[in-house]
Length: 216
Length: 209
Image (cartoon, rainbow over the protein chains, first blue to last red):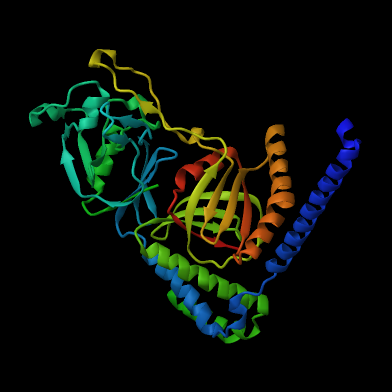
């Protein structure tokens, strides 16, 4: 504290006080501007409206928004809670526990490629349906296991790991079964959506090709 | 039922509209703007977010369907008023960084690790900042539950009300830009983390207040 009482420090003290004063003024001005803009007039207040038309338009808009909902069966996937909902209009036909993407990163030891194992979000369409599907193992599956990438296509085929059915969403993403049922409810997949056997059968049977799948 | 609706609407138009007060009128105009904005977002094939601060709800929606709903405990706003128009989420900011787990490929298949590494909702931050077009700065926090949470929320209140808001307001006014800040307190930490997981940079949203 001694330095504050030395003759030299008198200048520093004044400087500190000056800075504090400037800051306080800035705070005050900023606060005042904040109060003023808060009550800024809406541009809409200056316009003239036909209110009968406005109320009718609001009702119509609500109806229009409702009409955008998918017709028939559609699927909603909640990756945060690992839950799949099979819906038909406003009715929930099935609620099932799933496993979605782990979010992990795999980097090719050569450093040239990188994969992020995330379930993609957005609105998709059911593009294909398969019974007793075979898994065509992509490159990352071999790299992850420390195996060399085969040159022969037949070496990529693995049977029985995707369960009894697979529903294709495009870009290599599927809703399929799993051998690791104890992991349902956890984010462990490479991006696909895993379902239990019974639930997968229901989803497969009730979901037509072209149905919407909303993943969030 | 349909006829009843028509009769109701007829009488509604006949008697009610003439008696609309200014605040009611403003409400209908804002609602109209909000619904038009939502209709435009719902038409596209994308997920969008509605921050309905009037009803204290956050809705994750797609094609007009509500996918998930979060309740707001309370909120505070500051700065320029916002029109209920679509805004793009530019950035999700957070103090405590979460990291994706990296899979190290084994030397050979015999040395493969059997441990389960995953990124889950519980790994997400519960206190974060969303920067929207405008700019609109939105701070999401869980409601104060423990002593630590209460301390953090008080600290954020002091920081934003005494330091950031006035200085930010002044700075944005000097450069001729608009400035809006909203603090939203969700019911619990789980909701706060879940919202962080669900919303992605680039998503569009409407702030209705």
